[in-house]
Image (cartoon, rainbow, N blue to C red; front, side, top):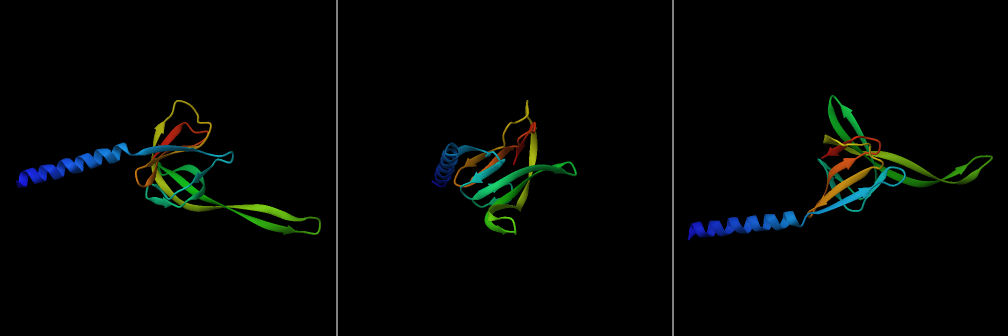
Length: 140
């Protein structure tokens, strides 16, 4: 009796795990003309939790380790008043949201646009990033 209960519990957990793996949805977000991506829901990138908004994505290395830096883009309308000109303009500010360590995979050619691959299985998680002009894909 006890063995059959444990077996039934194990099979149920295995079935649920397989169903959840099949329910995973993959989405690719490409950048706009400024190289910025828009996240529409809270998203996990490595150890970071990014809130919905517009982000610039930058790749850099430090001490032979590879990182992706996420910069939150904020835009604000401001009034410029000078003797010769008075008018509104949009001020754009990049605020560092954080960095995530990544693994680099070579690509056959340079990439023409920045893109982010997001896997959703209850929580949106960035799994891969390609940066415009690079020959590498960064896996998180």
